[in-house]
Image 1: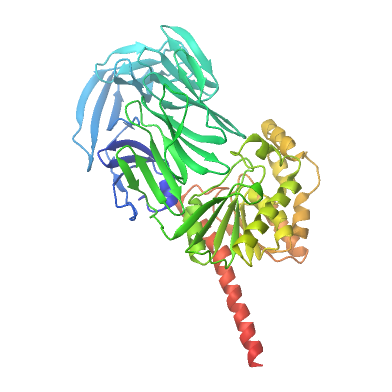
Image 2 (image 1 turned 90 degrees about the vertical axis):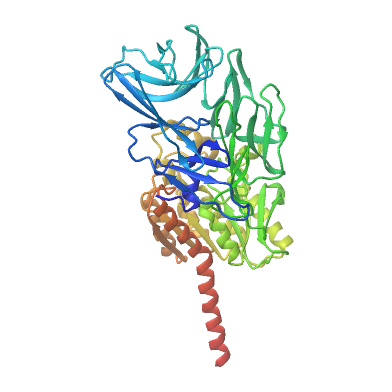
Length: 565
């Protein structure tokens, strides 16, 4: 399957940088792709690297090789394919004595900084057996000291770092030297970066043999993703007023510096101890790109220099305003509300670049982070809890301020998941032309009951909404009170929101004489395949753009008929 859409590019993970060529792995199809430096204004193209004939391919980020590891009886056959600018080079093949495939199986390949090598991790097929490490270079085989979890890397001082479902642990000279909660997101020669996350955001720390130290963001910033090499820690952070930036820090320091101007929404990927992290950035004006230590590699979405993206704070809410040309056309404002609520949205190419299509059709965009959104401090997030009507009034005030400032005569609302729940109530305050609700939570009580057997979810809902099973049917209230036309885009396999609940709410609305329509689409709460994604994004464009166009044509026809009579 070629990489031809943003959805497909979103699922790529960088593996190695060879010259100006970046090699990536697709989480959608399990294939390897390469992309080389293009002109910044031209979209990049991906070429698939065929792995036909490979029995068990392994890659380690930052190492420019694909290893085919064939475990047969008591021999490990290693076929080592170098990554070169044109794809795969000629392999080097060798056989190494190994544990029997009757007692052990290969589970991973990890970096060993102590011996400057890679080690194959053999897991015992029996509970009593040892996990073994095999040096891919010299064939040295040794058991793993008792540790909690799967081996992930070995430090230069011989410390083994492991990871399990409950967190990380370290063993040196057979003794435990540390453990804690969190996942390993980057491994260098002498430290790892740990991520601990919950509904309020993420925290990061550096763990060395000597202990753990928290990575502290500059005042007002929230770190969203972090990666590291031996010489640099790179982070992507957001700020309520300053927007989105990349930040850099020397591993021996404790202070970040802002790397550059706003960068769009970014993901930071670790590339091993010897190579700086690779960053993928997406934004409505900048398109999509890979930022590497060798320069910028253009992604599948080209730069759009005619688009203007502004970080604004109407009514004190973190927002992004986007328009084409100068000044804004002001034909209609589309207010975009993210899901969650423990999430956020800034400048991004969400929904397969749908926003660009909407802008091209003559709309301006207001991407708004309503109170309750995560990433802008605990006070902002928590002030909506148990007080959502006040949060919605604040959001309405922000919309009104933007409409007055930009002189926009008309507004519509687009909300996804929980954002649809917010949008239906926001419509009572801003009188939109229509509300488009995608994968919508309409009845919060139904949503609670669907996940009511999950204790963590119940606690989460009680803190934010005070809802309990058997409470009032808030979906019924929204279907009666929302004054606007509503288009509901409903996935038929939604695992987060019961499709039957969405249909019931839509039927209730039409029963109350409201103008609601249901657009079924294939897939889950968020699409998992390219086909489902393209179908959904097309339905979204149709709901926002084409329905307006068809209404305008209908009104024109009525005016013409009236004039002729």
